[in-house]
Image (tube, rainbow, N blue to C red):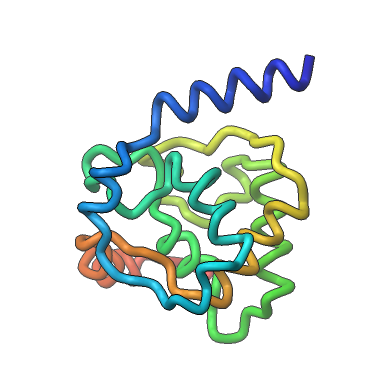
Length: 153
């Protein structure tokens, strides 16, 4: 039964959120270091997270905040990789309004659905996010500067 539910949710997310490869390639806003292409977390993030959190969807058509916004909201100068990985695992295992750190995103998009990803998968994605540059939409820097004053740690 769990497999059937996972399969149905995956198909729904894929058909609801995924952009065409041509559109995705056309709208990339920055290139990535060739050294990080082999990190397993990169491919996992592109496969699982970019369904709703990619950097190429316009601000008006987004289904969730871009991954760069998540990274910037969760990582501060004193945040360790372990703390970040644990925060990502806790949130993805049990997303809820009470524990949300991205209040504006919750107001705009609602709380994301609970996803059945293992701690290992979430850990690899978070490891990649922590150590590497993440694609960002062309509008993001201006948006981030405007919203930064509203953030609470």
